[in-house]
Length: 160
Image 1 (cartoon, one colour):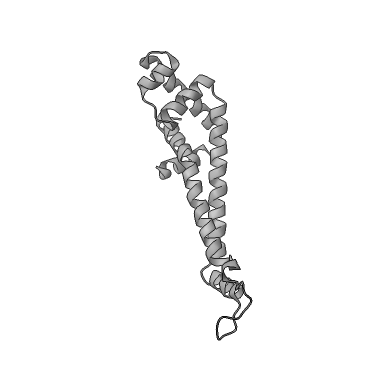
Image 2: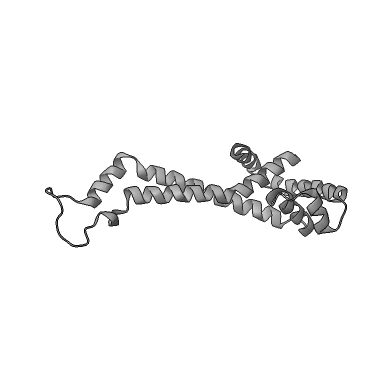
């Protein structure tokens, strides 16, 4: 696997928590809009209107009309896929040498400069860059062992 693909996958990994947060927010909003009938209950028990109504039934009809259950299923499927990708990438990162993992995390996840990384490792910048390239190669080897690595590369490119 090329180093640029590995970098894209790590950047995708970095953005997964934010993407998950957005999907969870969408899920919560849909549930509150179509399935949370607690906001329609009158606390005092007195009728407040001229017509007989059932707020739960009304919400159920609105949910069916807007196809809310299908949207919820799609969001849940996206959440599961993102969680699976996150877990897989984390496992691959955990399988490489600790120094290599730190280099990848410092450079791509935390976006440290080479000078800062050089200071942390007490090495020359050129040595850190060289080891970073080796780390990307090792990580690429870990990704290549996965059967659907091409799909992961496509997801990472689309998510940029």
